[in-house]
Length: 133
Image 1 (tube, rainbow, N blue to C red):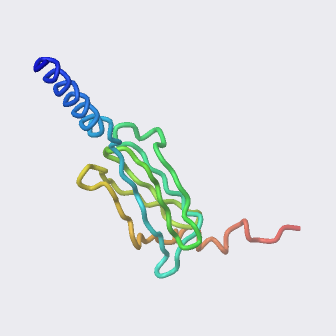
Image 2 (image 1 turned 30 degrees about the horizontal axis):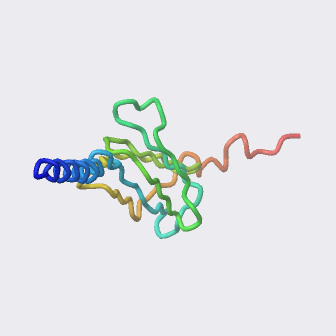
């Protein structure tokens, strides 16, 4: 009888331990990336936010577009080393390296500034703007 009770206790303990530790083993290793993109103090809408894995920059890993407040969220994003690129027609593209880890699970690009592309905005006297007959 004592052996049977001991077996039940051992089986119960193993079942509990397995279910408890499996939560840690199966836990998602993800974080998120958030931010707001501006031109000076004006939020920029429709900015393309592209994230590339540093190990394979030829393939887009994640992407988003900013909303009317210039905000974006990419959630979830797997732990790893990445390059984030911000681009919008009329503005110079901007890129930055970052890492998503267990200690830095949420990465924030708050008040991220894009600069106007002077080459594109100063073409008002180009051949494209001249009237043709």
